[in-house]
Amino acid sequence: MQQEGKDYIILPNGLLVFTASYLLERGYCCGNGCLNCPYDYKEVPEPGRTRLLQKRAQDEKGR
Image (cartoon, one colour):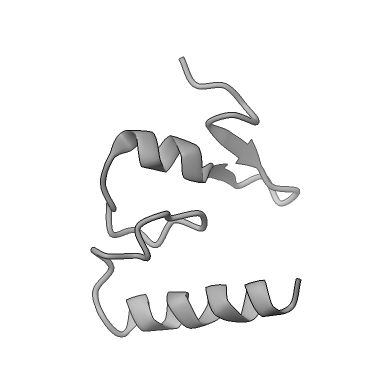
């Protein structure tokens, strides 16, 4: 059974987001552009993959 905080979080807007640890345990990139994808969006088709990687880099730079 999945646990909130460990496997997923619920954002203030109501969206459910899987954690990176849950996605790592799953073992592969699903190609859906998950917010916490630990696989660098490997299966997301271009140009989406590049856009997501650029957004992640901007977000990390802003922290």
